[in-house]
Amino acid sequence: MSLNSSRPRRTGLFGASRRLRAGVAVLLSLGLLFVAAGCGMDVQTNQPYTPAEGVNVDALGEYNVWADPEAASIVFAAPGDKTMIGWNISRLFAVLDPVEQARLAAVGPLGEFAVGINGDVDQYCLDTGLAGFDLPDPVAMAVALDDTIVTESTEEWLVIGLDGPTRGAAMPDRRFKRPEPNIRVVWAIDEAAFKRRLFDACTP
Image (tube, rainbow, N blue to C red):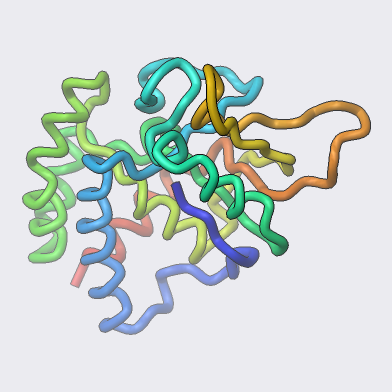
């Protein structure tokens, strides 16, 4: 899960300094390590959802929220603009198949490092229905750096299930007289634009 406390700034990676590009590339590769710990969040709404888009504790509860729903509830209800990019976004739009992995490794040391460090994660993703490893934290970072890659999002009032069968679920209140939205939920990004930024960040 990624929560940005303010609206993402519209600045891309293309004009970044060499040091920034190197730092971003390292973060892009290291970020995938968090997948094994359940980083990322699938939002249970009326949007279509299949098991290939993410992994939950049960039918409704995403692990991070399920483990501490009270804390998640406080964060979601806090004032200020927030943007959420769920693990489903990564598993739909930020997957690198073997051909793309080979291309990334070939761009230079950072690309080779980014692919090599994710070998175990690659196997996990293959075991859970993907064509290769996905990049949940890097895709959230990409949105934070350049909001123009978002192609679909909704403003939602999300309520966190605290116990019982809804524990760990982020549920939208879509009644006619619902409260004002407390978060923007991203549903789709420009996959090609994200991958261009990833390859540019890793290229010397």
